[in-house]
Image 1 (tube, rainbow, N blue to C red):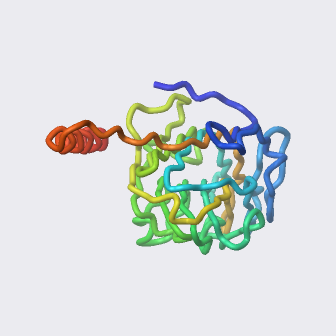
Image 2: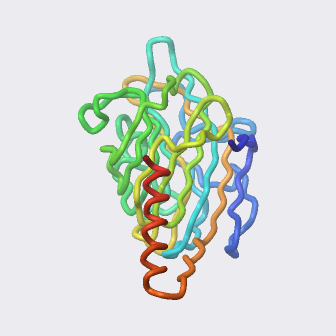
Amino acid sequence: MKKFFTATAFTLGAAAAQAAPVSFSDMTLNGSAALSGTDLQLTDAVDWQNGSAWTDAVAIASNTTFSAAFSFTIATPSTGGADGIVFAVHNDTGGTAQTGDGGGGIGYQGIGNSIAVEFDTWGNGSGDAFSNNHVGINTNGSTASLVLADPGYTLQSSTTYAWVEYDGTWLDVFVNNAGFQPAAPLLSYALDLASIGSTGFFGFTASTGAANSTHTINSFDLTLGTAAPIPLPAGGLLLIGGIGALAGLRRRKRG
């Protein structure tokens, strides 16, 4: 298993020309988002706050991959708080100034041309499977998750460590509160990152509503890359067998 490396900055890296270290202070902060020492605080424990933070635009192609690792805390009043944090990649018209709906929208609802992972701490009905403690994969500004799962601990109880990995086809989400990347993802879903457009803004949103929490990103590391082409063996029979073997490996990984 991989050890989570705590950092106060992230890197846009790998093969792209935009590879350069960027700190939270280089992100565009909107709404209630503000720097808090070396951390990024998206909301304070105040009702009806809404914050977002985005990197500058990066190029996205059909073979773009990325790996994001981040940690966050959701400090909640004893009465229970809201609403959660979202990690997202978007290409909506607002660019680095983009914000979504607050409250149950978690600052993400309404952000088009996007893929996202939500860490939701408030149940909002059937779109949340009536769950007030779950991780979900979402697209195009919808808070009705395509897939969701309880992480196995209370998101508001301790620091969450998350790894979001996209290999050009599948989005895998690993989550725990121990600091080590789990061997298997909590969630996986087939997505096309390039469907959002030729550029993307990476970042976070969070919001509060009639209940509140302090939502803080403690660390964020991001690496961009390109998917390696699959080599084609000589001969049709070998090619068919190779594809079948790869499909079987993929099924076993997620099975």
